[in-house]
Image (cartoon, rainbow, N blue to C red; front, side, top):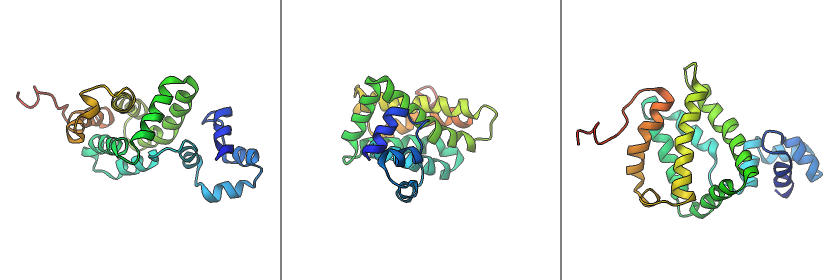
Length: 187
């Protein structure tokens, strides 16, 4: 893991390969590949990330299309709020906020491993823009809830946040659904 961390720090996410990590560690690349299916898995392990973004992508893509936004928001919230992962998630978000290089590496990872995969499943000419706009909502949610812990969002119930943010993410991704506002609810 030290070799992987050093390689990611030296080269960034985009320019790191399993072969480069193996070279740095002085082992056969097949050994690294034996333990890690791909660079995303190695990166998540090197970061000691308590959540695997590819798991969220898998959940999202398995969800009914009309519940995509809700599914993504719920999965992210449950991951960052789980007692076993909460402190590590907060630490990762704060690190990315405070260090340009860490933010760049996380951005490269999210764009390549999460956004491009979701965008690849959207049947729209502007799929990458849609995925990036949805990600802006999710990243904002991470920053405010886990990073700076601004109230009342930091302690809002998961169901409430999903009800309010899920439709916005849904709209960005597939362009239908309603944004849950007091006006839409007739309040």
